[in-house]
Length: 505
Image (tube, rainbow, N blue to C red; front, side):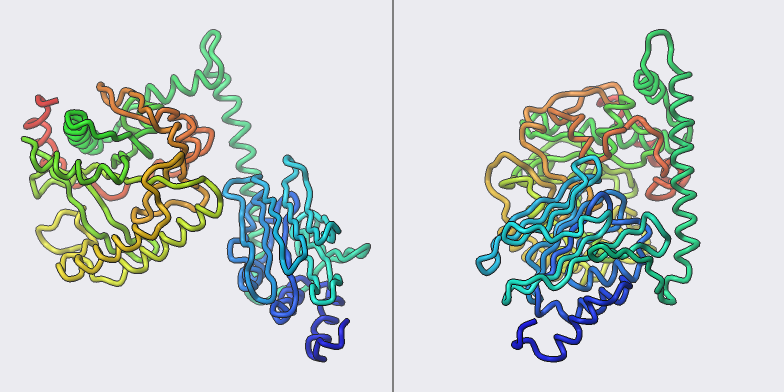
């Protein structure tokens, strides 16, 4: 240890080297983050049984994107308090492999799951210092003196409290805090959940194979099953029919004005899987390029039509505040709507670009969330106006903020990729909604409710990004998916509009 390090740092360093308790280790490491190079990687999986306090400790160190979800890889680098890398795989088993130079030293980090190589590499100037243990691997290095301070791993797979490894020595951790008194119960519930998931998989495997007809595969049987599903709730059926009329009219105006749009989210899934609405879905979504918004506004304003484009700032607690664009009936008492999402061109589909998007999203949402909304019970206001900003001065301020952020959001006029607008409602960070332009354009057509609508060119890959690979599985939110209750008064209003405008489509 160099004499340049003061005695307090030397004392903390010795404590770090001697403790075998992960909770203590992370606490001590926090006091040393301004002195050393700290690198954290993952091998196989970080460990779902990690205590909540440990996850918080890791994030407070500066590894804010660390996640203990099963098979989510991670790589993080901190040098003298500065976070140089904080990267989590966006999907399970996505490897994190990065190289960088720090003060003339070559740093390499590799975090791989069992199926992708099962390795943890933390290399400094060609020397791999990682303990390469299942779970979390941490290397602490003194770059000033070019010497290893410590290298450990922490694994929660073999015992409940985790195994701590340093060199040839592996010991079971014992310390927990009061926050973790319930962790044992949660661990057992987690194990039970995994058994239930496995049992469901086995049951579905048997049922779908038994459902096959003649030479059908189990996938064919599932497609046939989903294609036969219909909306049983009559209120929902009327609500969905009214939205279908809105969509048809919007598509007519877009087609007549050569404005590209495509079905998105659950509406696209419905077209692919049901040739219409998902039976339990109560909203509709389309997308288009942001550059086409002015043309859409002009086309609807000049059209002989029964629809209107309603645009407003929606104030919900951050990070859900957003700018909404909804196509609705001109009838002010009618709630049905079609949501429009806007996409921007971007330069690549890297993790760094998605992280930039998430930061823009959080910043924008926090700006919008400062303003006052319309109260939910304001008489005469449609539910689609809920949380809307109405003060014109506030609207002007938010418009200025929005325009300024759009101009600095690293979007470009054209490119090989498109990214969902940061001013829209957020989705899970795991859904990296960046697509190749060739996956969207040229647009194709699919049937929805008896007529053809535009869809992404590679709509299967598009759905993979949003929903995952298996779209032919009944979701867990079938009953709770609805966004709001459909009143009888609204059913009557929708019925009136259906009778009035059905013959137009």
